[in-house]
Image (cartoon, rainbow, N blue to C red; front, top):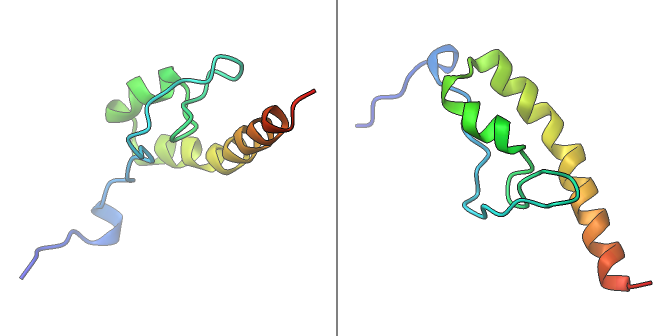
Length: 75
C-alpha cells in the first residue's frame, strides 16, 4: 500500500514536461512556459509562490501556441 501525504502536505508539483528549450522572444521554456528564473527558484519556492507561477502558465502556453501558429503561416 502506498503512503500518501494529506493534500495540505503535498507539495505543488513542477510543471516541467522535460522539453527544456527557451524561447528567445518571450524568455519562456517551450515545454513548461516558465522563465529561467522561475525554473531555477522552483525548489526553494513555497506552495503559495508555486501556485502563483502555475497560474501564469495557461496564458503563456496559449501565447506560445499563437506564436507557433503565426510562424507556421509565414509572412
